[in-house]
Amino acid sequence: MSPIRVDAAIVEPVTLADMRAHLRLDPDNTAEDGLVEGLIASARAMVELATRRILAPGRYRVMLTAWPANGFVPLPLSPLVALASAGSVGATGTVTAFAPGLVRLAPDTVEAPGLIVSPALPSLYRAAALIEVDAGYGGAGPPVPPALVQAIRLVAAHGFEHRGDLPVTLTPMVEALIAPHRRMRL
Image 1 (cartoon, rainbow, N blue to C red):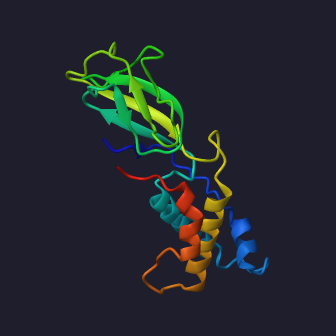
Image 2: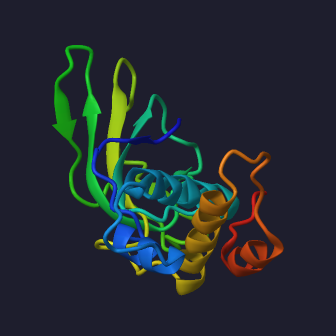
Image 3: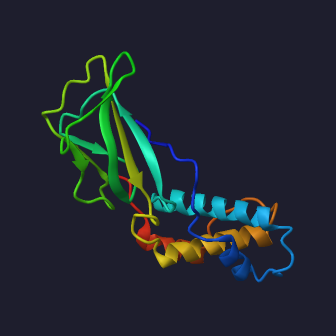
């Protein structure tokens, strides 16, 4: 079960204007704006990977073919913001919504994100569960921690100054900024 992002638009936690100011670029020269936008997106992705947190809000779809025995579905989406929809898809492709409350967010949506599923849910024999959740900082979720915003700026600035140089690694300063926000893997 891998969550799939189903909304197309990504709102970056660092704007182009903010990054241009951080880089001290000439306001009249916009020739490198495409590059800067790409660096912001790649820096966000690097910080997301290092912290195991979602820094741009979005909607994610999860498909299940069986219910977990313990009633808990762990999700690699932190922070979870809301349960958008939950239902089953039959062999004909018809989606039937579950009654409210049968699938709900776990109490800790940041450090142990997941879904609690009721034992009263119907069997998934010849069906699959289709669940959509909203996750990520920003938007309807909590604001992006300032240290992570600064980490994105620093990674993007490093990429701007050292174009074409490989390998790209996180500097000790960036590591220090993201360390308190890193979700550990068990």
